[in-house]
Length: 464
Image (cartoon, rainbow, N blue to C red; front, side):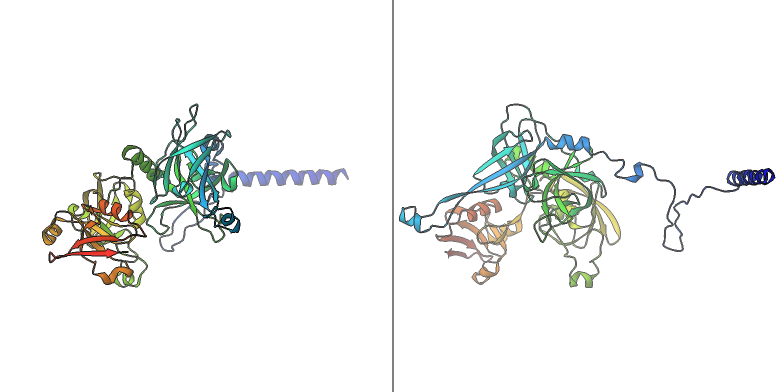
């Protein structure tokens, strides 16, 4: 029995020694390196041990950014007064027009200075009769509207606190990267100081008006509008604005106005009282159309220029129809919102460097942005433009605006290519005069438009 035990022990011991020697001298560690086979189009997977940093979320600490952000994000209450329809009791007691009914809308805002300036969305405060702001410490203040920009959906309001407030610094949204972690902070469904996390899903996303949004998958719901989108350093990189949803609630994507656009709008409102916009004077070729496909320009990487306006910044810079914009300053341009998003951060007089592809030749052209030369006036919806020197010679006038677009309902009046000289008794010198004059038209009165044609004949049209 002892002999059998001894033999068993010797066998096990010999096996251990043999296995150890094999492991030590013969077996190699099984590391697989990423390689690209030039003949196959496939990349081999890597089984190399991954560092903690490479693990992504295990490396990211959201707590500091969240703590700094929640105290700088506020709850915004919009109180509007509307007239309820008259009922039998209003008529009986002589109230005639019905009762005044307050309606309350809510959203979020971001404190951007210690003395109480707050940036939010224009749609959060639109048509407000009264604005109230509640801080994270539950203190409530009445707020004053400083200015708005409906095009970017940014508004600036102000409260007067007794002490200095925590605030967020604007980050550089141009440097945000797809896949970067971000936090959305706001007040969805009146739940104050709510923090959600996600990544930047896309940049320069267009939702229909050539805006340029940051798209994320951080959960954003009604009430988040006007809140902060911050990176893991706590820098403000966007103002949460919109979601796309069939139900009105979050379904996976949300959109934010880039901080560089919001910052520029705020600075313009404070310095000029309105938003200063610099224009190139070009129109891009529409994509995803039969014409674009037939012309072979549907899949171009860049912005294909279809139209260059006369005496525009683009024309003065030497840009021509058929040029493809590839880059502006240090910003790569793959599609039109890349371009419009960057231009939204600039003012008239700013000079930019454009990298142009012209018949496979690359050119660098400096371009100085100009003030807008065309716009659509309110009420009638006519598109008008400032007069060029050539126009002034043809129409024999130094003032006025030229009609270049007429809505369907007015096309039988012979308005196209006419120059508007007066609206009622208001002389029109440029498109801003036209915008203000048409904006003051009464829906219940009559409007007299004085125009001149290229033949020098003046017309007076009366619209009611």
